[in-house]
Length: 530
Ligand code: GLC
Image (cartoon, rainbow, N blue to C red):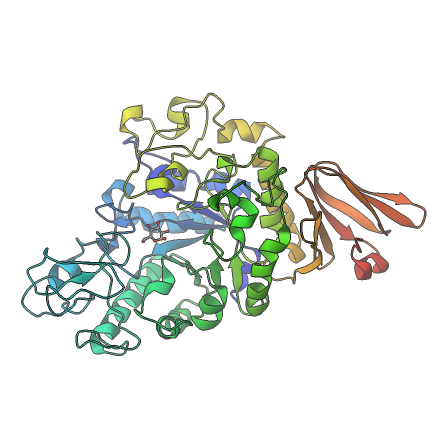
């Protein structure tokens, strides 16, 4: 497992909304460079930057027109290189976004592929052989190209699917994954990765990583085979490069494809929504972190634990505070509920990711769609730096901003939050510092569940000599525990009080603590909760 990931805490930056250094209303790479000290001070030592490539921006940059060029709105190619250098000077690694499954319909490859005359790129994308032959089970577009046939989409209409082949071709126009045309696509993508690694990035977040091979089997063996082919060659030349997948299936992504980490996203079926966003399902919000949610940690653990057990020796599950595709937690959780959620995220195993602005509790705004954002747009608003013009994001006129800044009178901002010891910012900063200071709270150390009962509190888990006690409910509970547990971090009213030979652990409402076992007896006993 990649060594530097052991202590990595990532910060996700949506470049258009982070900091506008040149006053044109949109964030840029120089803006990111100017804020690297802020990120370092917060304690994050790695970045994931959403796509900054040349693009018509119909899906906010996930529609790449030129993989090897920085979009003019973000700056120059040189700015990209400088960003890597400046980050490295501060001990910060940089992962950039790779979109391997599709390009923009304006990419040169696609323009060539659309031509009637056969050429090098004719099979770079998936085309059927006749304009009235669709692509069964997949979205496709016909009637726009000079060439006969329809082409397959990978996401929006603007994103034609690159051709990595079909696992079991059934039509004459479907290529196998080892067909020379599909191998050429694979090679082209490896070449893009190499290009940026040579320029100094430290790896990639791979977009829709599981989407390469069409009609893949249930283990995604075709797609896995492609990464197994690409990644070792890159590691040979860039041994410290790291790769995180948007796959949401850690076993396939890590054990199958060879990724270092896989995102644990808010997709149905992995239990994550039961923690933070149970409003997605019908009825009342029963999210574990809501004080009135009547939460149940077992709904998460039943899904998470088998996945963790399968991957803990080979890679990392990445829990995220949020991302650019997901409503921010502030949509439904209060400050205290979010603090407890972060306490959990930053003390669990794997490699955590913090979404820009989540450290100050930026709001999820109700906004019309922008660049294919739809409901996601509300999580993509400009970072709130201070109480000045446009909350410090940009010197441009408000009307010219990429997206409006939060105009609520109580909109948080980083400068004020840094001055206020009770702010969410300081909780995040303290939790990250705690993680950096203690190896057992970093990526690797085994996480043992000590107490997790259906619809009961608290949730207790142990990592090395640390015991985490988490109670998101409004109830108070007490229990007798062995002596020798020292509190090293706490939120709310939670104490281990010595009484005779034992301790009484009092767990107040909405509280969390990290206890360190200071005696051999405590180390062995953990916290036996009855
Ligand atoms: C990923 C990205 C998302 C994008 C989609 C298509 O899910 O995170 O923002 O729209 O892929 O590339």
